[in-house]
Length: 220
Picture 1 (tube, one colour):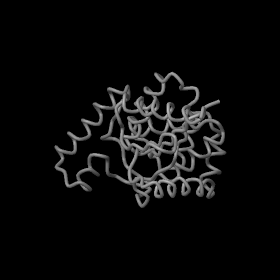
Picture 2: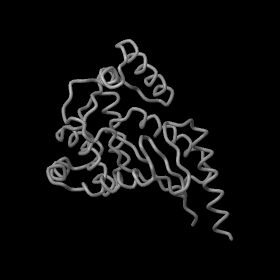
Picture 3: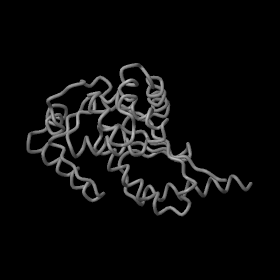
């Protein structure tokens, strides 16, 4: 059976990544050969040196990091919120606090191994963008993961050890080799790369192109 692979580098504390996820999913849902598409989620830390605790919200970080005025930061957050709404997502970025996401990525690898990667990813991304959840807090991660079907005691055990550290670092090293410097980033069929929350039709075009080239090669 012909298969095409889409690798997606993403961060759990990236509002654009959730929008990109929804747009890609919309493109995939309309793709004729969607059952032949294998999606592999990859870890990427936007701020690997970020704090485990922070009192700064996303608009406040925009002011600090980008030199924006409070009004400009609020307008920027409102724009992202509007785009999220178009994708069916509810954002409350004034409550979201960017923190270190390393443990959240380790949790995602554990969830994937248990066959629950998708529900856990959804729960974490929604909790961050809509509920102001603290994604560097291990108790918060365990509680959210439990809502998505994982055993919270097992999650705590994983997070207290160094489990899946190598898996996260391997994804990040692969990103460096490919020249990926931001997320979301999508690589179709190990050949075509695109960054950002692209329009649905752009993702659809890449799926069709990758499928065409893959099937053409297979019949030669």
